[in-house]
Amino acid sequence: MSEIKKGVQILDCTLRDGGYYTNWDFDKQLVQAYLNACNKLPIDWIEIGYRSPAKESYLGQYFYLPEYLIRDTKSRTTKKIALILNEKDIDPQTVRALLGDCIGHVDMIRMAVNPIRMDQAIELAKRVKEMGFLVAFNVMYMSTWDQIEGFYEKLSQLNGLIDYFYLVDSYGGVYPAEVTKAVEKVRSKLDVSIGFHGHNNLELGLINTLTAIEAGADVVDATFTGMGRGAGNLKTELLLTSLSSRHGLSVDFNALGNVVGAFERLQKEYGWGTNLPYMVSGANSLPQKEVMEWVTKRFYSVNSIIQALNNQSEGIEDN
Amino acid sequence: MSEIKKGVQILDCTLRDGGYYTNWDFDKQLVQAYLNACNKLPIDWIEIGYRSPAKESYLGQYFYLPEYLIRDTKSRTTKKIALILNEKDIDPQTVRALLGDCIGHVDMIRMAVNPIRMDQAIELAKRVKEMGFLVAFNVMYMSTWDQIEGFYEKLSQLNGLIDYFYLVDSYGGVYPAEVTKAVEKVRSKLDVSIGFHGHNNLELGLINTLTAIEAGADVVDATFTGMGRGAGNLKTELLLTSLSSRHGLSVDFNALGNVVGAFERLQKEYGWGTNLPYMVSGANSLPQKEVMEWVTKRFYSVNSIIQALNNQSEGIEDN
Image 1 (tube, rainbow over the protein chains, first blue to last red):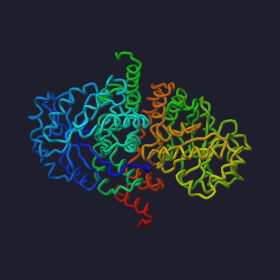
Image 2: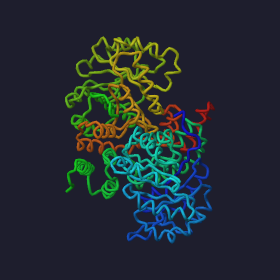
Image 3: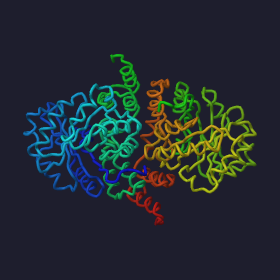
Image 4: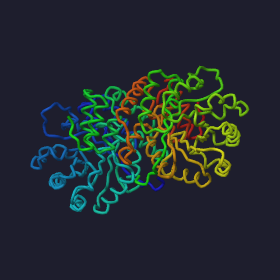
């Protein structure tokens, strides 16, 4: 780790990824504690939620980020602000209407991109870029990219268009050696900043992220207590503690302890973090969205979930 | 990971390391569930506790392992049995009396060895070896070995004496590259089987263990749900899931799910696992025994613990 790059940026996406547990509702005091702590910590970016067209089912305000909420957040943070779009949900024709009121308040628009929808994502990115935002592609399912014909060839089209290309370990099943290879492969095609977004199913969030930094990543994601979909993310406190002890990053541990304590109280209620079903889904590149539903509803025993996952992995249909 | 060694052995030490939380008392039904599951899982060894001279404060039966308990356990397991001694607590003169009734029931005696007490440990090992046991050294504080004068030179004295030499990441602060170096360095001095025992303060238990295996380790330790002192150990279920998906290790996930569920219920009560204070102690190679006392007693806020840890790390005395 001695050759870790100076100036690597940290993006905290607790409110965005944590929303999978709270339905994107967050208590005001918790958000204030979060923003206060971030202001005192060596975090460069905060991603505060989604911008989305209206959905049929109920979703809280951090899934839509109304203008007043963004303005209010911006007035209370010293950090750069990002929000994310689900590319597949957005008609490029509507993007000016969707994002117009973010201009001047939001620094970067990230797009969650399915790697088989790169063409559509490029069209959307052009419109977003024209509006003056920094643009990031968060390209999902990195463990599958080698199997997608023409995926890496297409990357050169992103040069001059996007600002950040994120490798997303959606299943939480990627190992450090694979991170290195993927970063190098992307870097060979693409001359934009590279990011890494890891999940923690196999407790590889920290080592994969440190490995991505060593391999040349410019920005990495984390969330406090790892709050995030399914098994969750790399823990911001773990990344900061590691970078503090090994690379002299200056960390205010009082501020860090306060915000971690606040999210730990929420964690007691929702219980994110890895467990055996999430380990099995990560290890076998199976969607943790389904596992999350099974685990949350508690209709199923751990055994039946694992059995179902293994059946999927062997190509046997669930019953 | 493609070159992982065939035939690497797995030692589960849930009862031994988990005893730090339960004072070495375990419910009979839980132990039965544990033994049943182990019998169905690709685990080679179970370490079931300590053998110790009487201590002043109360400690449960898995800290003393009376003969009837070992016999009873042996009758219910198909696995090889290990127990561990704290080298510093044992007078070599008394070891025949201490271990005599283990002959025929226990396969391996492990010794927890402080690396500055190698001479005393060698004396004790000679007596234990004469009794016919396999002998393992669990040498603690591997992050400090480079600073101990003559440590590596002494290792050659262990050839022909001990059967297993374990590298123990006592602080949970070692990174994979350091594991590789240490395993290679030990291997260059010593012609015995090598083991690795990791802690999970920085969530590096899995990757450090896989790295140790790649570097040539013959046996590795884990505990169900990571139950163990402080931040705990590599989780047995995580190791088995990883080896199952990447190396085709055959795992009965129903048996695994049952035993993990049983220990998860206990974890709700005791709350082992990493947290910010343990991360800080691991990252800075500070004794987690102290942190564990602070956290368990809850006399102190997280902030004051971290402040105290940082003061220790900077050589400032606590007040």
